[in-house]
Image (cartoon, rainbow over all chains, first blue to last red; front, side, top):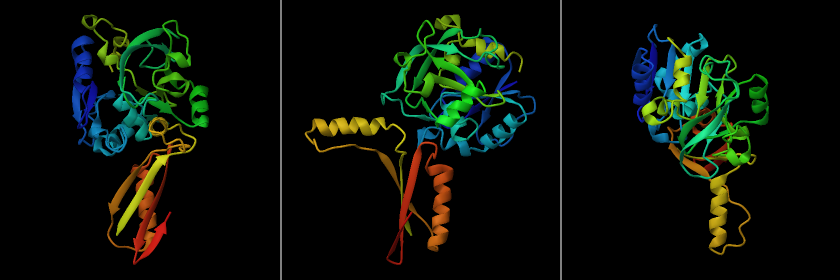
Length: 227
Length: 87
């Protein structure tokens, strides 16, 4: 069973629910953010995109104090799988479940477009359906996606293979020219040391159906299988 | 008691907003501008308490929510019985 958390201001919750339930045909349920516990049969939690709490103060800063986050932390500590997409990634960083922070895009603009990404870690339960270094296309839609962390933190992420996706050219080149938002090292997604918490700015749930012209995102949901 | 809290990006962190405003001010003819950094001001009204207690409480508020200390520095000021404190 998948659980999709709904914060006030979430707006990709139904997209995630739809893909899980109607595309990959797995059971899913919504979890209201005021809940302080997680149903025992839930094996994967999704923190969806949107503008939780209106992005007030900083993106994700206020959602970290919703009662459900304490439960999500406990769930992750005991090995449960957690994916934060876009605003969900921002929340995971603010809640210290992932290191670093997502700052305002270097261009100061909201960017909404399909971009090539390199899957640099395909050893995770979320990414095992991709080939190593496969270049995929996923849409981004954010104003605060500029990943920043101190040098030592970036070195640790590299050392423990915690960088999962990087923005790249259609041929897989990772250069400044193909960095949409100023993220250090073109980082688009990272995982925690244990590899059970994934944060990513691109939206896999928006490209999981033939009807939408791209199914690259579906592989994440398929990789998770019956969780 | 009234407290003023200031948060801004650390010197080591790029501030694209500040850079854009620098350009804007220069375009207006303010050629004396060397740099601009943008932050936030948060006004808080607290119950009356000792300076020591206020300092400790405000520090906790900043660390836990008001500033993201990965990228932001903060400082704050308040007044008790006409005496100003700043941290």
